[in-house]
Image (cartoon, rainbow, N blue to C red; front, side):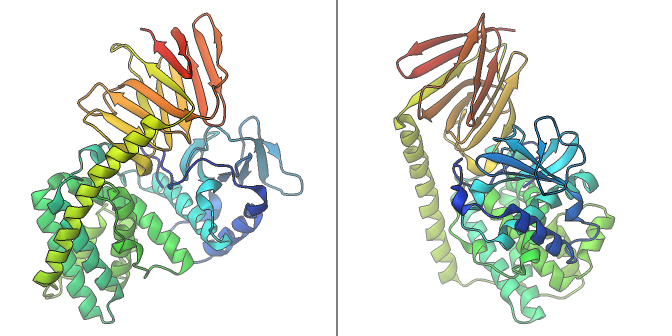
Amino acid sequence: MNALIAYLALAGSFLAIPQGNAPDLYAVMARVNQLAAKSLWPGFEPRSVPVAFFTGTKTLLFGHPHPPDGFLPAKGHEGVMIFAGRHESVVANTSVNLGGVLTATIMLESMTGKSTAEIAAVVVHETFHVFQTVKHGDWSSNEVLLFTYPMDEVQNHFGLLLEARALARAVRAKTNADAARWAAGHLKLRGQRYEAYPGAADYERGVELTEGTAHYVEALALGKVAATESLVLPWRPDQVRHRCYFTGKALAAILDRMDPGWKQALEAGPTKTLDVLLLESLASQEVDPARFDEAEKADLTAQAERAVTELKQYREKTVAEFRARPGARIIIETPEDNLLQVRGFDPMNILKVGEREVLHLRMLTLGCKNANLQVVGLPALSRGLGPHPLFNGILRLEIAGLAATPEINQSEGHLTVNSDTLKMDFTNASLTREGLIIRILLKAE
């Protein structure tokens, strides 16, 4: 996953993996070397990118030219360094600047149940994001648009269901002619939806270009490019980002069939989105777009209606569970002239629950001139000043479900918290306690 404006992560709770079940990371990296020998993408060399893993107890760093302070050599493993605990830069499956070098990072808690080959393919995915950052700075997904995406619109979700089914049929088609017909059908449906919901187009296309191509490379490494099961899963209407991993991969798979030189053309430039590349590849053919019958459309309309209703219920249920979480809570409030600013969040694990409120289910990083804080593995509810719920500044943050009241060091207005799940540093702030509730008031600069 790419880290252009947000740290991204695969779904999962922040739990240490029992060491008896931990994968052999040296075997994983050996597998990455094997996969790198395949022709995955023009100019892409995964073995040239450093990789950091957080195991749940330590951070292992492979192939970094000059590791930051705190990393020590791993005995018997040349080029491997170890940091006790989680290094602060490793918060997600993503790519980060670690010690001045772009580095792929992997949270092993998200890899539970995966084989050595599957974990190695995820490493290839994340190293491809480093390649994108270096070679293609204009490949981007604008996460600001996620918060204005029409996820509560039945017709938009109906269109997504219909398009995904057409795309899956194009990938599975036995003949090139049938693949072209269903691909053209997908593009026609997509064009109609984008006319009705133009705000959806930029977001989807950006995620498909960044995450879709990375997921395609991951699938190519595993030999699973033609798999379509995840493409047609009953994704919630707000899981548009998840869905775009698979629509992007499917578009790339069809391009392999329709235009085998598409990757070289994309590398040469100019940058084009995957659906536009496919549209251009079909333009020279006289293709009659495949169509759905009315019964199938009626079935998908009913599915879309249910999905939007269930999304509203899911929001209510999730917020209620957050309110009811046992344990200690931290509530941070700021004055309007010293708002906390978003520095990192996980768009795969958020829920917009109001015009100005967002529930962060896994990770959030905020800061301003006299405050820095990072929450990993605990739910946090942010309230923005508006009109954007995140990017106009955060007025209030509530963190719930702490197993124990955290140890807070306080001295003359300086507050610090340091644990695996919470890292906070405030100056010019006051603290009060009300039982298990800790309130921190950030004062003006």
